[in-house]
Amino acid sequence: MLTKIRNILKKKNKIKIVSLTAYSKNTAKILDKYCDITLVGDSLANALYGMKNTHQLSLNTIILHSISVKAAVKKSLMVVDMPKGTYKNPRQAKKNAKLIFDKTKCDAVKIESNNKNFKIIREIIKAKIPVMGHIGYTPQFKNKFQVEGKNKNEIKKLLKEAISIEKAGAFSIVLECITPSTAKLITKSLKIPTIGIGSSSHCDGQILVTDDILGMSGFYPKFVKKYADVNSIIEKAVKKYTKEVKTRKFPKNKNFLYGK
Ligand code: KIV
Image (cartoon, rainbow, N blue to C red; front, side, top):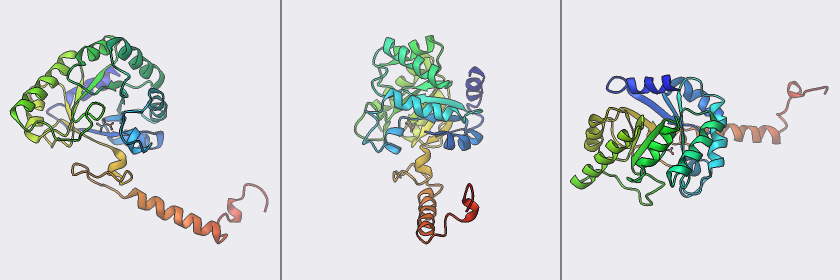
């Protein structure tokens, strides 16, 4: 685990860090070949469970998906999101981070910043669990989507928040939907790597939701690039299967397990 973290830290200012989300073993198996960080994100709530936001996702649900992901992760650093309400105070945060860590055997947890929970980060790290921070648009704490870092006040606030997270001991930090110049300033000001989502190429690495880049979620904001249209591939296969079952083309004798 610590070697994996050290390798991520070493990439700062040298090689871009590649990261995507996974919610199951099958996706994680492919991601693990290419990604430096595999995140079991709480975007699971929207992308897979069809919830309107991430607020109702339970600790148990993310643990179960993380166990599935862990079955395929060998090389990449596996990070698990702590769901909303599971890190309200240092004691609860430590207890739940330990639960995630012990049950899933992940390498680190991610917590969203509310610009106050630095002590919580410190407490989790004291329990020898590495923490990834997350600032900017933090869906657990902000209901309204908006780009941050547009004016002097916001820039100052975000930079201070990022520095506090680094000081608390986080090994990296997600910058979500932050203006390019602010993302650049934060990335230059920190020793730990920044991982951007909708925050320009100035970050040390990039993360996106895998279901979005595969064209499966139906969610395509400007910062998402659709690299494939997996939905249409699935639809084509299901359509063919349906036709073959109805026209008795499937199963054939060769698909029978025994006899005729
Ligand atoms: O939940 C998630 O997938 C995330 C990433 C988008 C950073 O937090």
